[in-house]
Length: 117
Length: 117
Image 1 (cartoon, each protein chain N blue to C red):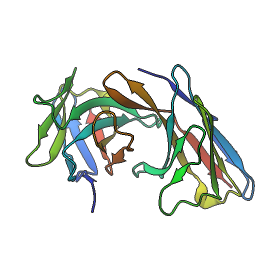
Image 2 (cartoon, rainbow over the protein chains, first blue to last red; image 1 turned 45 degrees about the vertical axis):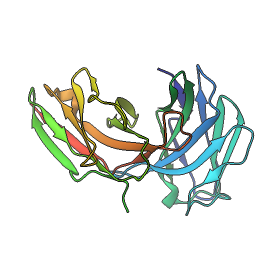
Image 3 (spheres, rainbow over the protein chains, first blue to last red; image 1 turned 135 degrees about the vertical axis):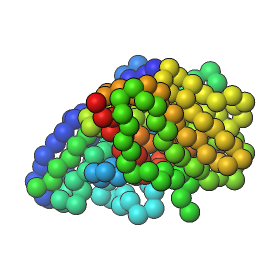
Image 4 (cartoon, each protein chain N blue to C red; image 1 turned 30 degrees about the vertical axis):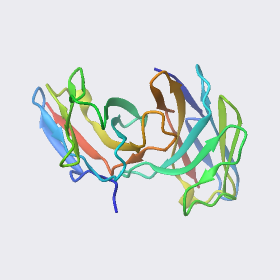
């Protein structure tokens, strides 16, 4: 397998502030990383696809100016929630794609629980 | 239209018994992969099992097996000899394209499994 870490694992912030979440592939290089959002008792919804060295591709309905994604290296992608509001409170999960001999595989981080007060 | 459908929001099973979690999918792509993930209350996504659309045999991984019925477009997960630690949310997911596809995973709505002592 492969290890993907996220930091922080949980964060509480005040409304109007910005929060940065880091996603790292610890033992492999990930040319593509994905950011998901999950509300309680619901499924994972893809927010954006992040490719190293290029702009992220956002899913329909996701505000790119509010959810800033930076994939600066092959092992790090960051999601910044700008001017956070209580409705942004959610569980954010990143996933990193690893190339294998027979194809690719996607490995998930442990998630970051964001609470905006 | 939903690409992945899980019709059982919640399931109960007695410890040591087997349980089947339903998943149907919809795609026109001849190449695709089907995945099952377990998400305990901690939030991490744990990969359980994978089935490729061209795989001739049903996938098995320990106590997990995937009942793949291609004509019916179903990919049910069977957990044998349930354990208390199996209590979690289970997600079925699909990735369209071949094994090297850069496309993202699409998740179903999930099934909350509770194993009773």
